[in-house]
Amino acid sequence: MSKKKYGLLGTTAAIALLLAACGGGGGEDTDTSADNAGGNNAGGAEQNADGIVEFESGVQNEGEVQEGGTLNVALVTDSPFQGLFSYELYEDGYDAELMQFNIETLFGTDENFQIDDSGAATLDLDQEANKATIQLKEGVTWSDGEPVKAEDMVYSYEVIGHPDYTGIRYDSSMMNIVGMEEYKAGDADTISGITVVDDRTIEIQYKETGVQMLQSGGGVWSGAMPKHQLQDIPVGELESSPEIRENPIGFGPFAVQNIVPGESVEFVANEHYYKGEPVLDRIIVEVVPSSSIVAALQNGEYDIALSMPTDLYETYADLPGYTILGREELAYTYIGFKLGEWDSEAGEVVPNPDAKMADLSLRQAMGYAIDNDAVGSQFYSGVRSRANSAIIPAFGGYHNPDVEGYPYDPERAEQLLDEAGYEDIDGDGFRETPEGEQLVINFASMAGGETAEPIAEYYMQSWAQVGLNVQLTDGRLLEFNSFYDRVEADDPEIDIYQAAWGTGTDPTPDGLYGRQAPFNYTRWATEENDQFMADMTGEQSFDTEWREGVFHEWQEYFSEQAPIIPTLYRNETLPVNNRVSEFQWGYDAPEDFGWHTVGVTADAPVTE
Image (cartoon, rainbow, N blue to C red; front, side, top):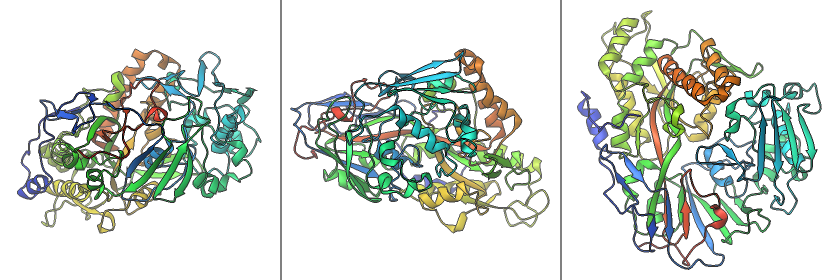
């Protein structure tokens, strides 16, 4: 990951002004102690010598913890949340933020995201027999008082594999289960590879196993669904059912009491929680627009702000009454190129060699034409930095730091375009195609936050500097849900798009760039990539050193092929009010910490 200081290298005055308008530098040096006596411990972060902000990942505030109390939480988004309270059905990160309070997954993980025994169930993977055994711990109970059973784990698979399933979780890891494809096709009433051993235990027979299955999200599904609540609802109608949208139940520390669709959720303590009854009586989560969240925190309206926009970091870096926690986000931002379509019947991508963006030189040139070191420094005050690869640094040895990626090099971009035959024939300042036809590239980017439009404009101006005519799809930024609906539908009015991936906790990229991955929105596939994906999850992959070598080779190949241009690695921030007793946000948080242990030490959020 590049950590250079920002330098404007030969950009025009217009772009320089555009960058300068968004501010520079970063937060002031602050006390980064993780202990806070309850006074003004604003900030909680400082910049290192490379201009990258470094954060504390946890805080403990002194003071007597109250019995009960209400935690006020802001969910920062400029769009209503979709409200799909189901790991099997949800599609965006805002619903995931909400579900963390009431719907847990089965497995706990360690600091390396490897499944351990700290969750509601244990996993035993038998490599030689290609079999997984999942056993629920005693006392794991749904929030309505019913015990979680083996049939609830099986039901989750049955919903995802059902012919009428409307979600996006049916992928190659599901197809790897013996009998799943026959069940999906409607040729079998049950999934032959899944066996109920007893009330708390199931066995799953796989066609093959790989080391990724020991990772959270690495191929062993970790969800369970309350069959006693949902079994009478047709699978195709689950998404719209009140049981999912209005009265979801889970086995997490809190239970849903009330939902105002798209606006707020009120949770109450789950007295049946298997790790112990929560300290708090309730948690109220409300949607707050990015334009008003800083003022709301200054007024002490919320204790914690989820999905806090980092483009506003300078405006809350020294917020009185709060500690700003941070951690490397399991995500990256990228520019994607539309290179084909999704075949829903075959369940795979179909590349189009005649797509507008099929020319490799064109894609590479667009990568070299944009200065993402500048974007990270100037638009995000050092909270983000240029990405070199689609494997994030948080994945340790799997990340290849030696991949160059696409550093800012407009001369190289122009050379690539010249050699590929993209020339300005009519003298209008924009290049035509090698066939002499007008080239207009339609660019989809999302609305939201103060920097969304300036960054999109900056990218388009940067591409114009090397002679490419790039225009916004529909002439405007697209609303979040509309954006992803159109990208997923392979809208012909989108040639390139700017988006971000949450990577999850498994470094294996087949769920994003495999041939059979619905999330492969670029619709790019090659036989070489197929082989890389197979090697990453094959039998030899249990040799970690060998597997890391495959990852390193793939990153070189993927970067050269440029179906996407990774643009930014991201830190995420979490303002935590000084009345919150304790909060641990690091990936190495203690096993005994959770929402059920969080309490408050005062009647209302403090603002000084």
